[in-house]
Amino acid sequence: MIPALVPPQGQLQELIHGPVPTDQIVRVADGDLVYGVSSVSDGGRIADKHVLTALGCRPSIRLEVAVTETGALLLHPGARGTVIVTSNGHIRLPYRQRRRACLFVGDRVLLLGRRSTARLLVYPRPRSASSSRRRCRCSRR
Image 1 (cartoon, rainbow, N blue to C red):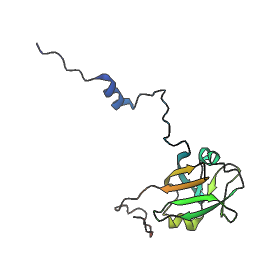
Image 2 (image 1 turned 180 degrees about the vertical axis):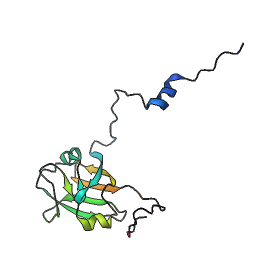
Image 3 (image 1 turned 60 degrees about the horizontal axis):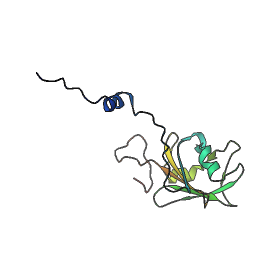
Image 4 (image 1 turned 30 degrees about the vertical axis):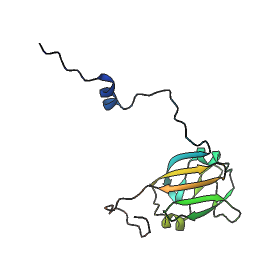
């Protein structure tokens, strides 16, 4: 007689219902880094209070914006900054910098911050070459 073939239940259940929740906390290798994922909403607003408070960005602090060669936005505190942290802990990216980085309303961005320098890197999701929905005339393809 041939015994019944039963697949392992743990992996099959994970495929059907998603990963099993665990009590393990994944720690970042570098405690100086803080990260988050957000989306660009109306007027270039990025709302990730956790990242901004971890970097010490209080309301009414001015942030200078620079576009890197990879198409990311680098924000850091500066007296001549064009971005001001709102009372809700959000930031609004200026239109020109968003267009230079090919950021549109609804785009998801990765936020990487370094606590020691209070710098925030806003990295847009890479676009596929076949994306015909929104064309962008920037150096990043």
